[in-house]
View (cartoon, rainbow, N blue to C red):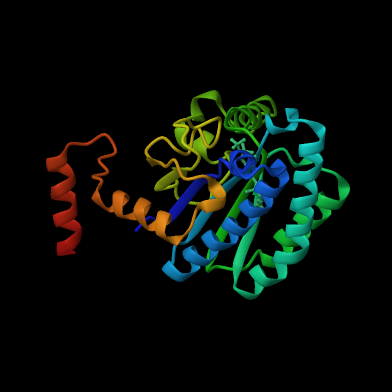
Length: 244
Ligand code: FPP
């Protein structure tokens, strides 16, 4: 069972177009699929769920669609946060939040503040997020410490960089899922996905449900995660752990 799932929720627009409806109808149906996915994680004891809700590139979509998405986020924050808190979900946002309007910003802060001590599920919403931007921010933060004399260049290693990245306090995602048929990472968690198992499906996000998620988990359970080691080494490590 993965303990951290990361998902690119793709295909809302095509789902709506297939029904000759405006794209926003697809995003609304996508929001219901988000709720189903959270329910599933809570039922199965998955500790962390990270969702790509809006990329730094999505600001370039037609203004009407951006506005509709912002309205949807606002409504979802108003409707869902108290219920998530009741279910002990910790909600957080990663990405360039200064680009959001005051109403959304305020609700994001309230959601984070209210749910900060919850521990059943950590729900991280990537909003105005880009993986390259995440790496650039981490590099800048290290450079600032070097310039201020708080850090030596030779102290910069993978761990130092990792500690400045989004989701630094969580184990890396075990399983990445992308719906909608494209087989790309699209500037999602570039650093954090280094050893994550990738799973792709043609299913469009509004149709994503427990059955499809179970297919992904069944596939994941068959994988051998070697982290650069050999099969024999992994088997020896597993035997050692089992005997302890
Ligand atoms: C990708 O589908 C989806 C998005 C850009 C938005 C994701 C938003 C939601 C699932 C709605 C609610 C989310 C939260 C967290 C409340 P697309 O529009 O790129 O679809 P297409 O590839 O078929 O055009």
